[in-house]
Image (cartoon, rainbow, N blue to C red; front, side, top):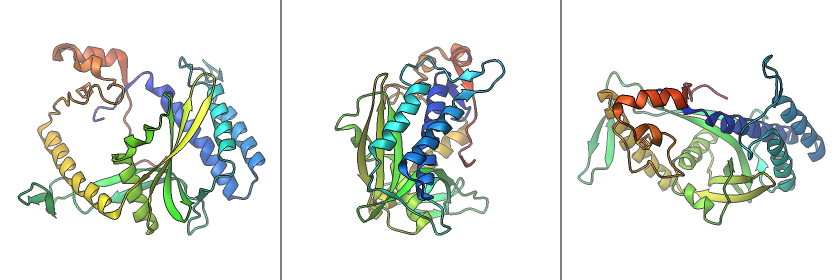
Length: 293
Ligand code: SF4
């Protein structure tokens, strides 16, 4: 993250994900503007065809990939099938005070503590108080909400995921506890000053011959969000310690989790040759999360 290294195969997933979200954002906005289902769907398909037509002089033509699950065809098919699947969805987009639909919202939350803050600890080690120093630069929590919806009398963030694996009954367990979903719940609560129950996760399994959809829920109470923020203080203090020392120790209990870290073939090499492997299999592109999408 510090140096911005990414795997070369990652760009297919990033492009596919960006267009998938753009298509659903367009549909939600058109429906909120009063367009009917068919009209909005036609415009989404037209948009997706346009976005995936590459206009570079050297490789002009339809977007092509070497990933059989993520192609121009599976993208457009998944958009059409998702939109048809949730055509009569009881989850309705929240309309903001300015009349705009709550779709694709970038957020930034400034905390009242940051690097240089001092923490006091009770006997159990839990950080309990933060004393800002004069030079404190507050941390900013930032991110992006796909959509905020009203669903059966409650307000939820909606997050859309894509996966090439089967979405089994325990798929949604991975989101509780989960850092991203806790942050999204907090952000929506702060921004809308309204009780938010948690996150609705719409997962799309995308295979060569089919796309399948499942919906799951993850809930957070106020006390859980409070606890999550307290824990952030501990993790950020640790990150500050590594940044100040300029040394990031290997977290080698995490290398094989979540399908395997893509940097394993670098970290498993002798330190003297790692840079060579980084340069041959990865590229650098800094990601600035403060830039709104
Ligand atoms: S391979 Fe392991 S040690 Fe290396 S970056 Fe990934 S998780 Fe960390």
